[in-house]
Amino acid sequence: MTIFNKGSILTNSHPLILALEASAGQASAALSQGSNLLASLDVTAAHGHAAWMVSLAQDVMAKAGQSPQNLDVILGGIGPGSFTGIRVALAAAKGFGLTQNIAPIGISSLAGLAAVVTDHTKPILSVIDSRRKSYFAQLFDADLHPLSPIIDGGVDAVQTMLEDHQDQTANGLTITGYDAELVAETLQQKGLNPQVKGNINPSAEGLIKAYQTASDLSADPEPLYLAPPILGKSSQKDNKSQDQK
Image (cartoon, rainbow, N blue to C red; front, side, top):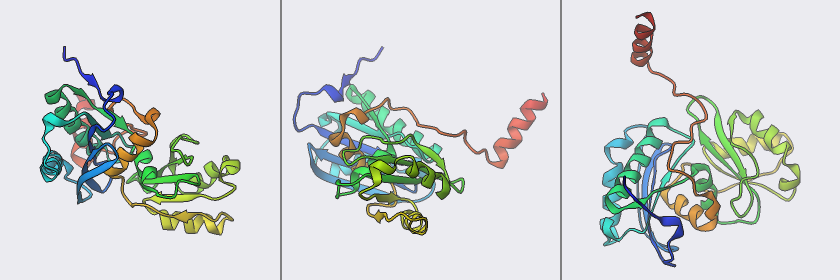
């Protein structure tokens, strides 16, 4: 049995942190020494994250003049988002963890999105593309504590969720993530007045900021799936053949 060191209980006040994120249309890796970002790299693509996830991690460490042996904490984005991308990032995080005897830590990709917003004075709505013509969305307070469960739906579902949290959003709201401007525009037509800030895709840098801002966001490094995978034609055919046997 492999025994890991728990990154979350390290006493080092300036730990070397590697973060890997690939839950959406971007694969990214980032390295920080405490709150000081040393390096970050990303590749924008809807698919194919497996081809460069480990290389991104190795390159970002080389760029900062660091090696895996120096790592104290390893973070991986757990989603929600791309089934394949999430698995790729977490597999890479676990691989580095095994070699360095460090237990990787999972961080919600929605929390990572919210963490990138610099104006942490209002609640933040994070939005990720579900790739099923709907959104994954969650509302956080200014300190990144979740105010709502994660929802999977369209703008109407987002509006309903916000109506359930009118007290928290009465003084304003910031939206970040996929289709943030479109979501904001639609909500404005329905009487809300949100601001739009932040990135389109979750990032490794955002995971680091989320981890440092709210330690209770730490989770097991397992994919956060809100719906079963959508099978392609070949997989559907294979499953049908199995059912007929």
